[in-house]
Length: 393
Image (cartoon, rainbow, N blue to C red; front, side, top):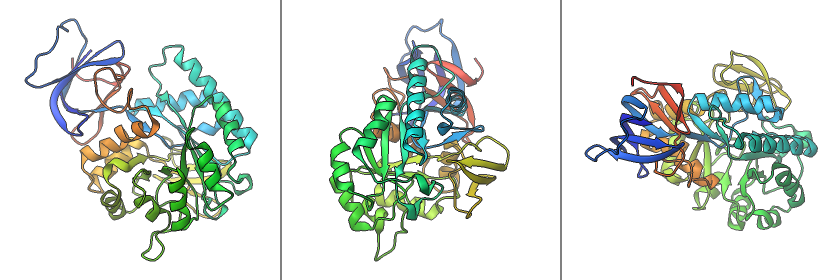
């Protein structure tokens, strides 16, 4: 396949006019205007009509969409979630679990591992690739539980984590903890070489959070949300993230969770290379307004705002990752080139899959998304095949 007449997003994080060639599901050549194309006269040709060509997006933290939740733990849920995500340009996913009983989490993870194995053995090009699981609970703080169910919260425990990882057959990429609960330092030191340890739903102060990062934690779950506010005398988790250069942080740029000025400040504080956009979307995403559930709790959804029925707390998001990227660019003043990195290269690097995903580079998966001038979705190419849209040939 040839994708011609596009603005190609390069590994250097800039757009250049050119075209892309794919073969056997991989990018075979990136041709910048002025260079000579190969002998591909017989290839299918997609005319991008000047569209932006970006890598397939990667969501490392979301719960569900189209009426399904990852924690439903069924093949139908996994498939429908993966189909919807692929159709909107999110071609790789690392869904998040909720705070559920340990046996229930083991069951969900085992089902996910079985689904991933079966998917890898057959052609499932219309589905996003399941590349990881982001465990948001159960090792969190009741003080900052948000939409997590308090009765299932437990202290961090390396043996329990390994039960999760064994059930998932290595699919768990992130394990969240509240470092003020239990013996977090010992836990971090014991598992940090097996999984990315993140601080999640925590009431930790600066010193406690910084000690966790110094011990080997390296990620922050939805920065600013479900953690103490950053103030000039109590910088908390946010200050510890800023002072820990190895830490990457998730941001929900849906226009609900974080004020645009705070998003802009965070880029200045951390640098773009440390920020990953996530959707944190729940099962109501892509569905009408109404009442849904998240982690067994009732949630009311109106527009892109999801709140717990019990206390009105924010309960995830009803916004897709592509819409978060658009919001960041069009309403928050983040440059397009920067925003694209936050949904492609940065999550791929965080997951440890940048050798296959996250950039339009020869040898990597031919997952390509074409966006119009207003960032509207034009076409999705997954493994070298058009799975959504299509432009003049």
